[in-house]
Length: 219
Image (cartoon, rainbow, N blue to C red; front, side, top):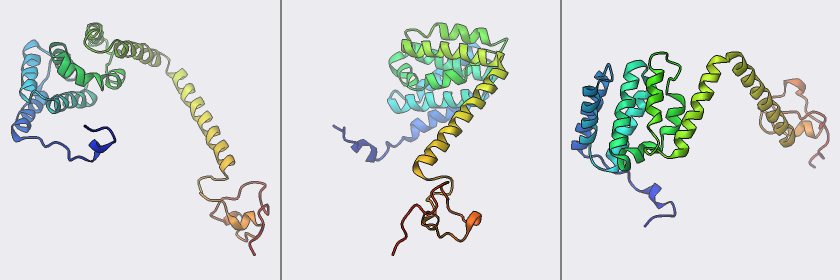
């Protein structure tokens, strides 16, 4: 058994050629999809299952689908979501379990509810995910939908919110600099603290305001 971090030092499991060959066929078929027809989705799902019946195979398949979802748009992206949906619903303890580890992050950012044509299809898709993925994950994806649509409808408010966050972050950074005596330059100038820095404003080190000469000179 492992438990003290030993597993992180083990060699990663090797992937046999047969698995790689079937994975390549699956990825090749994904790249050719155009529309999410029933035949296309079934073919892709079958090729996905042929990759293997083990955890590594499930990770390969789910990873490929999510990568394509993140890089594609329109019907091609929707096709990948349909393939993922089919695999997870029919094999919840395999593909469903694997996908549940990542689907919240992907679902929050890569489900285009705002698409006037495809948006309703995505809503119907997510509506049937209860029981496939954990309830809290599905609820979070629905909340992300509301936030995303609100942001698209209020771009000026989002811009102001970002500016306010940046302002607050800058204030916190400055406060930390004052507390630590550091800034972008790194360590403070020792000569300045001892009151004998001859470089003045040209000094490349940090001069903490009001602290000139506050440190005893070394003998």
